[in-house]
Image 1 (cartoon, one colour):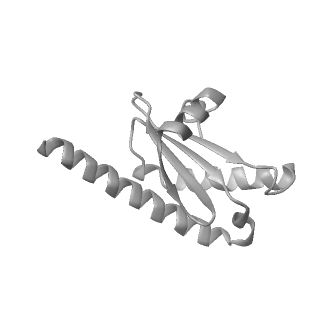
Image 2: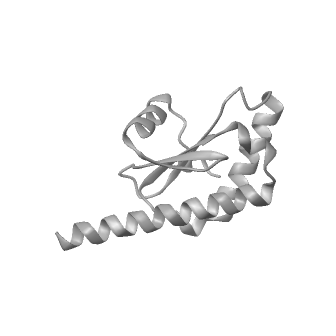
Length: 121
């Protein structure tokens, strides 16, 4: 993942979490918000409750791999923050990948519905 596609600043994280919409799963929560850029950005947060540094870095590597595998589904001009839950460790990689795909599909359906509403008004 290139640097321009990453949310790093603490203020950006807090702004997206406070003002953005969220979608939940048993493994993670994804917050989304418009970023007024011509590309999407991702941020990944893994709490110390999930595991030690080795485990947290492994989870971040896995999430980056999943994010890269579904590039065509993301909306340009959006920021995505993924907060990993403790249940992540007990799930298999394939389950996590399916759950992530389902949430992205759900987000895209909701975004499309909102755009249709705004056009009709």
